[in-house]
Image (tube, rainbow, N blue to C red):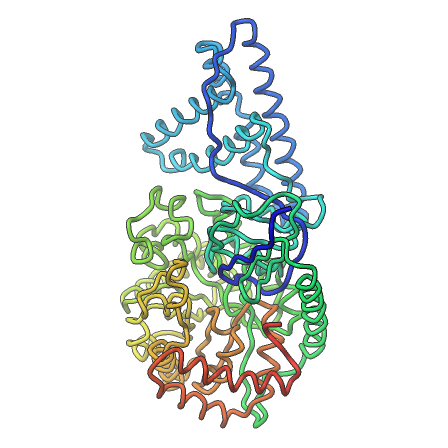
Length: 589
């Protein structure tokens, strides 16, 4: 057993998990060219096929488990990988190399895949060219099986802590299908797809932990502290007991808070706000209701992309998912964000290449308008659902910076509405169109956007990144990424004020909405809707019910007058600590 160590990263999903690690390394394994005698050729080919059969069986098993817990759309990704593995052309090419060069199966597979990747790059067909992502994934599984180092099973096993260097989106799906109780990785950010899935499943997670895989061994005892962002390897027995108590306390407090889920989010002097849920996957609907959500403030539609990458889902597939979502919240508002692809989110799959500076590149509405064929399909699906549930669906456009982008989307919606009506399909007389304010340009021009839109939603994750010029995924700059920086707060205030003057609701769906320390100041700035992952709703509701709106406004004015993020944070922590003590709550236990 290795010595006790504590590593730090970014707290990605709250909670405490304890147990044995399940080590997953996704870095390519080294492959050595081993010559074989003529008489061993057929034996080597048999070994190649046996390895493929084992991988195919594992993928089929994962597909069943993923389908049962997350739905057939996610199982389809694993089925596509299984079919690629079963492609006789691929196996035949590897066999040919083994026979011709008389080399081991590992080298032959590596050589064939390398050649296929080069051929993919030459293809004019975007779909075929981008299948290289799937090919790499499948080939990695096959190569590991041949080398006797298969991918660990994340399903039907003992509860384990997943410890990884990185996890691709297709592998992240297994989190929902398996028995992973905690998650820690060297790569990944607070908004990566793996992190979002971990949050939606309530799995404690820490990401961006440098040296994690090298420090961890099979058989170690690991604690993932998703509150503070620590990973403890073989901690001292006394510390283990402290964490056991903390985990029990967390579960007890969560149960107590859930019992208050039916109470309104209303201050002590009668000021009412609306608490909405951020939803990524349909299976989260039940969790949102249990936590007392009053609708959906953000549905990340780009998750649909995971089903059909590198293609986007067709209109009917999107329509069915949006319909199920809206049906899950009868009579309540459901806000669906149009694709926020590009940037670092599945950029390679969509664009076929990575941009030199993706955060400032083709992403969000910029990408949607640049690929009107993709966007048109999504808008048609949204209009059809909005037509069936009038007044319930809101459509939100991400990453706007120019009014012309909003106006172009409005023109597209109007044309598509007429098109659908000519086809005899129901459409809404009016569709509530809103925008995510996540770049300073949009915040500074919020009064102009507010006049042309039905609602605004503030995305604090990106607004902070662009205002402070800090890459939010950069571990070296983690201490500089401060959403409570006075500059960010002033932009938030500007947006809320613009919404109030225009008579439209303003929501905040970034991570800041779920941060207890931010609740008093956001409330005092006049925010009308808080949207967050369902597990965070109970604590935020309790804090809102413990403070008066008059006091919140005084707190906000004081915070806005401060000169640094440190001053604001210390000031707010003092206030929130008092509220939490009064409520007998601890958010970091």
